[in-house]
Amino acid sequence: MNWITNYVRPRINSIFSRRETPDNLWTKCDECGTMLFHRELSDNLNVCTNCDHHMAISPRDRFSALFDGGIYTEVSVPSPVVDPLNFRDQKKYPDRMKAAQKGTGENEAMLVAAGEMGRTPVIAAAQDFSFMAGSMGMYVGNAIIAAAQEAVKFNRPLILFSAAGGARMQEGILSLMQMPRTTIAVQMLKDAKLPYIVVLTHPTTGGVTASYAMLGDIHISEPNALICFAGPRVIEQTIREKLPEGFQRAEYLLDHGMLDRVTRRTDMRDELISVTRMLLNLPPAVRGDLVPPKPSDDIEMSNGPEANSDLDISKV
Image 1 (cartoon, helix red, strand yellow):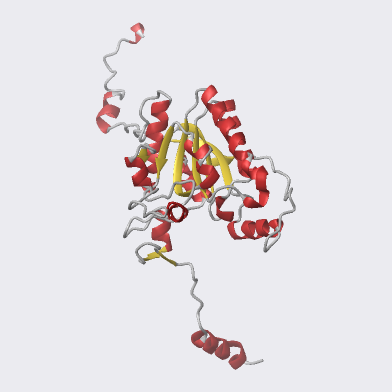
Image 2 (image 1 turned 180 degrees about the vertical axis):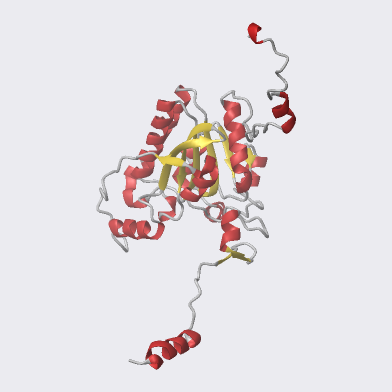
């Protein structure tokens, strides 16, 4: 071992070695094709800064932007029986679950959390479309029931973000049974006179649309979200007619009275704060605290010993 081995060779290797560049620094917009830097995209909540296209966002990132300071507490959800039907298609159901868990880092397709939004305590639930297309299975049903029970227990409104391809076929009729179960959970909120606000994101389809996603007191959607039971392609092939432009998109449904608002994701937090406080008969949210004024030199001098020289101590 000499100086050539210890210094020169490593130096030469470091100069001529190929530097690996992370492959997740840039994201291509699905709509306009613009390459977006990952920090710019995340700061804008996965909304394209060029064409305003709303890309998918995880429930945790959504909650970090929704709750005050990004602080929230997860609500525990009872775990159902795994693969009760022993379902198998090209893969076994447990294998698909493991792959989804590894790819997303989540246990299931819905996350429930409690926290404050504009100093208003709320319960929030969000579906993860990247987890088996956000499909509604027994866990999702348990999650919505747990969210409703938590809301009733602490007298808080429930905000739900839907994103799903429908019922989970691997659970068969047990998945479809979540439609009446979640409907009963929503009725619990109505009996307790608590607001239930649904934010429909792209896409919200199938049995989710036919149950809890369309039972809210207020329905807000992100722009251009697909909201339907059967998709437009299925309908066109069934009725053999060409559908109107923008059919089953958020703006079309807003024009036809199925939605109350269409709101950009970056404006969603302020919108939800205003709507929630209005439904709770609360005053508008406090935007910020005023900093207490610092005592000026004049005030300090007026309170000094010279200012009190004429004070009669006997009367104090």
